[in-house]
Image (cartoon, rainbow, N blue to C red; front, side, top):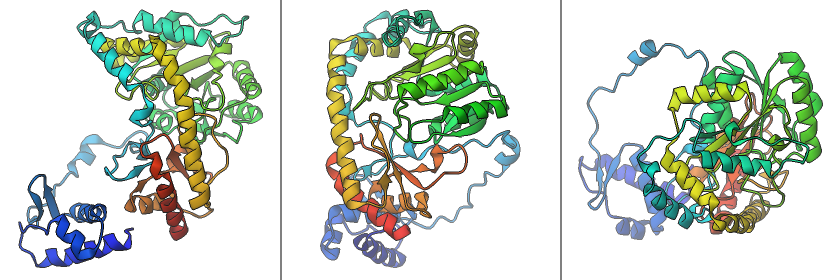
Length: 469
């Protein structure tokens, strides 16, 4: 869907291209701006549409030219079907959050915060210092740098009550991002063909990792306060599952944080069933109105396999995370990680440790809270004013996202396409459901760039919902 100005330019240039010889230069942007009375941004959007249709090509520094029709036969990739064979399980496509966006678009789809919310100076200085150490030229231990293992263990121990023995540094495995940890847990602890209980909706990356590991997902409704312990217990009874994957703190996509009472009740169910709770604490450093309460800190006998990532709070370029597990489960996961990647770059580990060991890291986290709150509240206000049909039921107390419910019958994918045509990129919510969606949703990242354009973005969302709905 295009706005009127873009559509007029596209229609006019299509007619011009139809009569122009191959290689002809398209009128420059200034001329088109004057001819159609449109802004340079609108002209650029029209040119992108024509380029996507294969009618023109842009040559940086030279201009835009009419493409010659391609007479060569189309590429035939059908042979790969027989060579690859059928997949044992259908692996989901890449998430909409991983797509690129046009430079002038308002990006609300990404899973990462904008650069101005990250400790950029700390990261750059840490990388320089790490490059001068032995970490730049030596192999790191398979389980991670001992100093970084100690840091993660100490962080978790700080939340443990006095009567619980906290995990030791040996229980910590350093990973190249928590996604690799999910893959190893699902392969080594759950196993192909075995059931895994998951919240619904849940993190799309967990759905992807489970599909690749051949694990069978069993959805448990998440609810507005987290899963009902009774529902979870019945799911364990019905399926014989040995693990439950969940995000108790600022869940992606809903933003829900379990209460302390709900968390203890769910941990009791897991322990009584002799099962594992895979706790994904992805947003530990992204608190706004509350503090994180990791359940792993209350685990006495190794029932919780805990994941914590620094990727979203330190830098996407430093893909460093930790997995905390005890006993044979830890050994199985370590063996799986070693078989796949052998070890995590010592240079990245050293840089990540340098960042979080600085006093300025705590200062950064204190400043991050109000910055996230300002962005969250700005997008909430814009949606309520400009797109009331995209309703946010619960204001998240942390994390990066708003979970917006669309009117019944709305198609999130079509709404997303309509928004993108108007320069706003959003993520349709269907991919966060491990089975059929419970309703039409959009996931909107309030921590992205251009918060001063939230009002514009909300207006576009409102118009798209009205038109598609």
